[in-house]
Image (cartoon, rainbow, N blue to C red; front, side, top):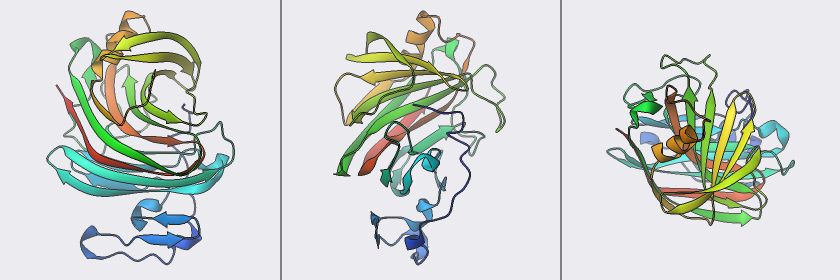
Length: 269
């Protein structure tokens, strides 16, 4: 699910419970016990807070927070070369059909650039491998709706900046819970990388294509370009388009849960 405002949400006030949070030296953060539950990494609890991790950065993206009530936090756990570990914890209520947050790891473009060492953008016609590996666990504390998904951004030119509206958004849902559903309507079931996926097509300020895995998984080793080429064959994406950003995280609609990523990496080309 997407929205024209999903990545431009205004910064909102911090939770009152976080105002007393203190941090330890060297970037290690205190765990906090608040009235909303246990949260970690106080600096990662600010709406849209950014945490650099090599060529990636963590984004506490709370683009839909104004549709409900609650909070989201993110924190880094480890980094070894291009492989990182990180976590997020959220608690949201209200508007069960609306995404409140998409805490995620970002590689490349996300309404601008934070790193030059990403290997992006790449032209779709180049068919360059975009190999994404991800191992994670979701720990629900209160039932709700969520997904765990990759989010790819495509533009029709390579020289994008913070003002560049994307042409396409391609989501790859690895798991979902509750009544979480993507934007648009289901078109067909396809087989990619040995698994079956339901393809949804929708539109917000740009085209949104969502591949929803039939059956949840907690690990993936995917060539994300395979999903792009599937869209090219259906005439939905042009070979001349450019992949500018790759993200991975959890879209939270409602509920309380924690996602722990034990290993995540993306290699382009």
